Amino acid sequence: MKKNNNRNIPMELSYYRLTLLSYLKESHPNLAYDNGFITTRSDEASEAYSNAIKDGLSHPEAEELANTTLFRDLLFSRYDTIINVLWNEFSDIIPQSRAKEYAERILSQCELIFLQYTLSDEFTDSPEYNTLYTELTGFISLWLEENEL
Image: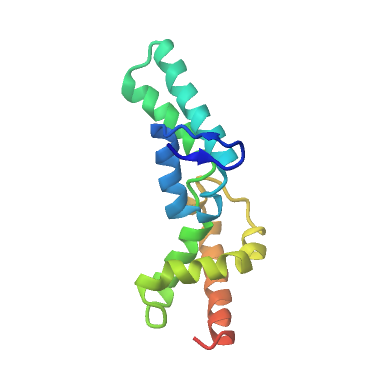
């Protein structure tokens, strides 16, 4: 069993912890090593599931509540958005196989752009998403020119 570096005690390898960790590595790499966040959120999801079962909900309904808790405020990903821009707009410059690498390099530099928007789990479906996408495309284009790519 892995040791939690912060407390030097074993970390529970629960279903929710592993599910969240996998998702964070894929869509929010900046949070993938935040053990406090992962522990808190996976514990909340587990508790939501347990309480739902105690309240008489079916296992699928309890699982849905647990997943809602587990992924709350994580469905919109800045990282994934940058990858989409790279794939859709810059595939002639950056191969898809290297888009994640470039997204990691660019992400922190795009922070001021993201801060101009109220980001939520539903943001991708909002009219503002297209404006964000356009701004990111322009920023990344300039970034690529400045970095001679």
